[in-house]
Length: 230
Ligand code: ADP
Ligand code: ADP
Image (cartoon, rainbow, N blue to C red; front, side):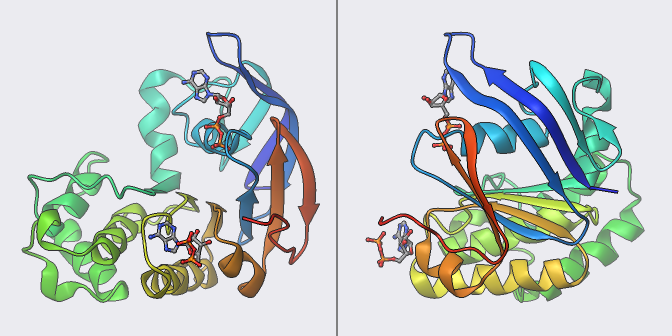
């Protein structure tokens, strides 16, 4: 069974902009897929629907075992346990330490202090930042902040990891380091979905490529290429 399944999904903003039209898509457990397309194509909207930041207004959608159209507001945290999210601008909490940033994601889903302590150390070990556990975000480089954000996103062992331009603010070296981590997480069984403008990465680290233009899927290719000039 697909871990992500969308059928005839349409999303229109209140100002009348139709950001997605009639999206049909199946993603299987363990897949790695890139979402590509020009600016304004609908990539962010697509990603926001998957973690229920936005509600779909037509069609049906399932992520893990959750029905996106029927999910009650109070059940959104349950979905977020199955779906980790990483952003271009990291979105770490500036007044919390690295430990607290990751611990917080586990506290809100009711994990106990002992398990939290163990898991925070585990995920920081995975991203190579155990020595920064007491640091604050503004004491870290961009690449380090993104690695902490990735550690946070997988703290609750989500089935799906969604990344919206995770390398967009990073230089090539840090970008590749982030890709190594996403690759490692994917090889451990997590489904990874990543929106990106980084042609070198897409063309080098080959995975499924889903291209969106004008709110429609215009290409869906196994081990595809980036396909744009920018
Ligand atoms: P991408 O991530 O591919 O750049 P977006 O999903 O951000 O594209 O945007 C898709 C379309 O929806 C664009 O036309 C954009 O201007 C519009 N849009 C995005 N967010 C909003 C919003 N909050 N309100 C109205 N229109 C929006
Ligand atoms: P750019 O002119 O976009 O920085 P580069 O050839 O330097 O192009 O980088 C290669 C890829 O890495 C680009 O496709 C770009 O998306 C990404 N990239 C590298 N550095 C940055 C940066 N500082 N900001 C945004 N994207 C970057």
